[in-house]
Amino acid sequence: MPDRSMLLRVEHLRKVYGSATGDVEAIGDVSFTMDAGELVCIVGPSGCGKTTLLKCLAGLLRPTSGIVEMDGVPVTGPSPAMAVVFQEYGRSLYPWLTVRGNVELPLRHKRLSREAREKLVTDALDAVGLGHAARSHPWQLSGGMQQRVAIARAVAYQPEVLIMDEPFAAVDAQTRADLEDLVRELHTARGISIVFVTHDIDESVYLGERVLVLSKSPTWVQEDLAIDLPPERDQITTRALLRFTELRTHVYDQIQRAKRGETAAAR
Amino acid sequence: MTAQTGRIAVRPRGRGVGRRVAEGFLYPLGLPFLLLVVWGMASTASENRFFPGPLTIFEAFGDTWVGPAFVDDVLPSLYRLALGITASIVIGIAAGTLIGLFQWLRELLEPLLEFFRAIPPPVLIPVVMLLLGITDTMKVVVIVSGAVWPILLNTIDGVRATDSVMSETADSFRITWWERLWFLVLPAASPRIMAGVRQGLSVALILMVISEMFASSAGLGYRIAYFQRNYLIAEMWSGILLLGLVGVLLAATFGVVERRVLRWYHGIREVNRA
Image (cartoon, rainbow over all chains, first blue to last red; front, side, top):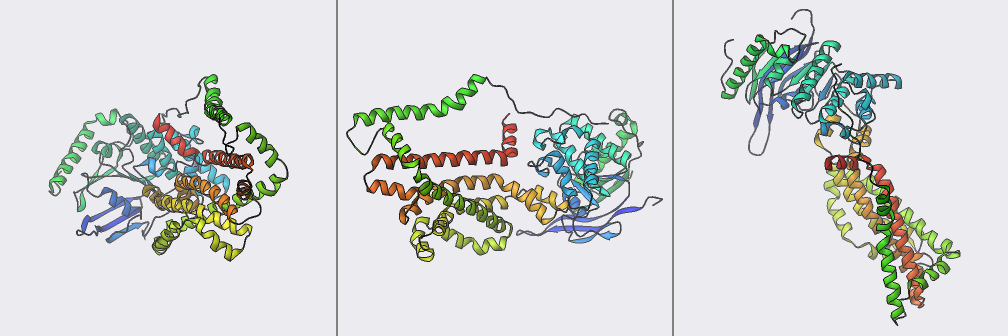
């Protein structure tokens, strides 16, 4: 890999859930690497173990075998270099805290001066366009705004990589478009590395620089596709590009194949 | 900025002032007033000397409780009640949190808790009396022995029911143990804890009276029993009236605290209803 340094390395990751009725192999054998500053989307058919994979990456689940490495160090538990944005914003934000309190909470145990902490919080809230809502409670905000709070909390934590688990699955289409552009902006303007898990093919192509297509469970990487769209993306013009259509058709095809259990097709 | 954010939801306000006054005073006070009138008429018509009219009782109320009896009987009772409630809340929440957090502790203690909870607290009075003598401590212990249970059990349930996504969020941001307790576990359990405290309060009031009726030379419960034995009927009723007032005051104080502590909880419910 030229010039960019490797950030995340996943090798032969396998996860088996033991249960009374027999073991369930959620992830078969997943390997990929990610460089610093990349935005990688992970798509796959529903029930393909996307969330399991993400929890293994974030150190919330222990893989059965295989390696997850962050900056060359094995991930054995939640790491300060990672921040997660969950799909269920309503259950991920604490309703008894204000918006500001929620964003500030993960910073409390970081050894920061009061001013530095406040600056991080204010800065993160401004970055998601919620500077004016700092004193509200999450439940006073719309769903899209609540997810912005969750993103601000992750940004303020200053992780090396932001891990997002189908973050916009529960918001309406217009809000979703706004939030997608917010993610693009955080990525391009702030250079944040992002792993974005989604089941939405259009979303993965629109957002990503790379799309990893997962197979159905037990999961492996069906295809690692580079998205050669220009870095400046726009909801209308980008989605109207011929190349966008080709890429999304290709990913769609791959997912259909994955559902049928076929291996990768020739491009 | 890509941000295109909506307005912040605000609670709806602005009902008519007249209607608010009516709801604030007339509704809650109307029925009690009506009952007083009915009672007055009934007692005037009745020959039974055990049911004096409200005016007689109000008179006895002033004569009995305003003055030295307030210092000798009412204040000690309230003091023991306050002590009992405070101890129940502290013990209930502290123990409930620990038992709720650690499964091995729960498995260890559960049969024991079920057993002790099933014992009606008044039967403990003779036992505690033997152990501690007829003291303030004995009465506070009796109050706690009953009032602690709803708080303890509700706290255990509340702590156990911490939402899995909220926990995972705390895990992923490496929130420390104390922060987790203070910012996640306790607030998440607070609606259950407050429900337990509400039940505990009424139990505490009952046990305060009973503990004083058994063995005491002062206190509200003792006074009421004394009046009854000496056929001071109006005075006895005035004592019951005072107990009712203490109960109402307790509930009102609790209401103020509850609204403060669970502001977020009521806020969510209001938003969901809208």
